[in-house]
Image (cartoon, rainbow, N blue to C red; front, side, top):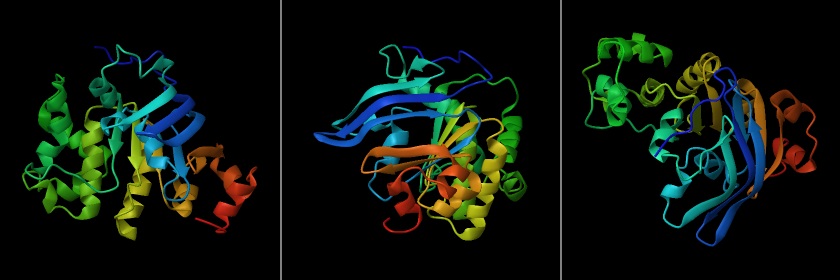
Length: 261
C-alpha cells in the first residue's frame, strides 16, 4: 500500500468534489465541492448536526472507521485521490493529522512520550535525537516553556488547555502537511482558547489548517476562509471577511445574524 505523495512542495492543498457521505442508509453530506487553500486557516461553520465533523473526517479517511459509514465523490491531496485502492489510510493520516474536540493525551504516557508516540507508531526514522524532536515540537505548539521541567510527568497532569496543545504537538511531531481540528477549543476556557488561537496564526505559515468551530466569532478572528454548511450541504465558502460582511446566500446571512443556529 502507498500513501499520496506531494506533487508540489509549495502548493499543498485539498480539493473536494461531489462529496456524499453516509452513515448506513442516512446521507449526511450532499455533493460538497470545495478547494482548501494551502497554508491558510479554513473555518467550517454551521449549526449542530449539519455535517461539519463528518466533512473533515472524510479528508483523512476517519469517516470510514465508523461501521456502516461510507462516502462517494473525490477527495484529492495534491491532485491525488486519497480514496484510491493503493493509498494506505494510516500513512495518509501522517500527512493529514487531526486534533479532536476533547483533549486526548495517552493516559499512561508522560508529556515526552506523548509527543513521540506518533513517530514511534509509524516507525519513522529520526534524523535528530529524540530530545531535540520533543523540544522543537513543543516549542512549535507554544508549550515548551510551560512543560520543559515536567516532561516526565503524565500528560494527564497538565491543565486541559495544555493537554490540547500537547495533542497538537503530538500531531505536529510526524510533520503533517494538513492539520484538521474538530472544535479544538470547545472544552477550553477563554485563556486556553486564546493560546490555541494565537498558535493557529503561527502554524498556518507551515501547515494547511481546516478547523470546525461552533463559534462564529472565533472563525472571524482566526480564519482566512470560511465555509458555511447547512443540512449537509455547503451553502457558501469564501474569504472570511466577505462571508461575514457580505454573504451571498440569504441562509448564510440568517445564520450569522442569529436567526437560527
